[in-house]
Image (cartoon, rainbow, N blue to C red; front, side, top):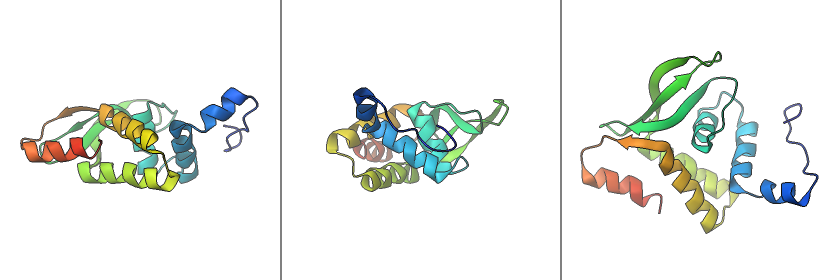
Length: 138
């Protein structure tokens, strides 16, 4: 990134990588701004680290359906677990993003697999709620 803009690709390989869903998501994050909750969620799921406030490398679903993750401040100090979003809101963020970017079916599946892989543990008790979360990523 140069002066808040993504530089133009110079090689064919760079052009191809620019078409990837990960690159396109990163562009959306850049436009949304560094303090956007959606940006923080998306960058955490993509495994991108930043030198400012961010969520950790994984999230956990609590019994009540709220996703929590470690929060790192501007100095990189972990401040403990904080709420990220509810499972429904988390799913909605990725669904809306897929629609906004007009991702192909293959890219949608890859994005939702990555989103699901970020969830380390699911403490919800009812099988119905767990199935809802799994079905939303198929």
